[in-house]
Length: 453
Figure 1: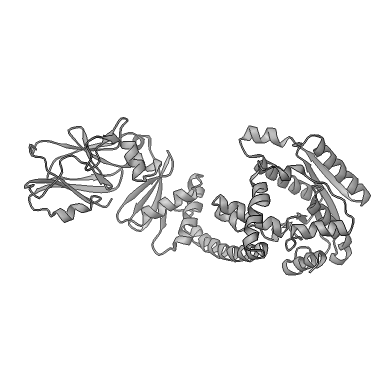
Figure 2: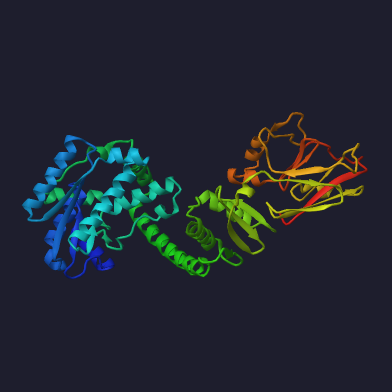
């Protein structure tokens, strides 16, 4: 299938243009945008397009070369009797000021400008030169970075943005330009390996295509399927979001995880303007699987509180940001509000050693000289805390133990510690220390058990 047929197939399959549309072309002067404009001009009457307007952004990144690109675009517009709008912008300076990548900054500026031109001319569509090779590069690039949304690629039509070359390969576009003697500019920055997309295009894609020559077609099919799935799941998420957006809790029971993590992300952002990363969301899902009450700190100002089958979002009063500390005597039970758990203490001489293997729920200690008047302290961590791992002779920094336990940073201040005689006996719910070990010969055990945490 030649390029023109692929262009028309995209129009037929995705209804890109409607009768009397005014179309703004994102016109860089490169092969993709020039060939796209050439086809739009050639098929203008067939497609019943009312007007074509060019929009060019001079990013001022390549000095004289960028200015020559701009001149080429202006000359092309004059030659073809088209209107053109030019934006000159120092992308590098803006990127440095906003502490963003040049690629992201340039893209944001371009699309804002295209929208501005569209509104200025009361146009209906903005056409870009994105093609099938671009789609493959985009999906691979986002896959490498672990970005779920980006990994599905782009669609032939997204709102007023249309991509008529969607079915075409880059080499087909270049061959069409050569065959029809269409001049275009070459952007030398496309060969600089300092940009991730160029690494993917020049290094990664050729390697993958040596394994799968039909890479682009395979990824196009995958893109469609991922978008079908995502559209369904986003619609399901929206239904739940509309139920809970004005409440301070979510009913989490029975919601599939594929919907639940999307819902939590969307709901938390709506409530607290905090965007939860994928790793944070996965941590939260892990917390939700555990029984009883749980607290997850999502920022210095907000926590998520799980109570039974409900997830609450709560702001943290200043008083809750301070250290917490409780005293506990044997035979007592104590509710720790900061973590939503109850800890009970007792003395026994018959606790089975097998029961003590689950050090996340129950721990016992053999303290020979223990006095019933002595108190245990339950508090959160302090600077300089150290912990003696079981079976070791020297203490380690508590921070290092938290890292070994893979406890997220934003949870560490809320983890309660059982302290006795200035020694941390238990990272409650996680790990006991090596102090006062229990053996077969132990006859009087001091034990602690948690519920609800």
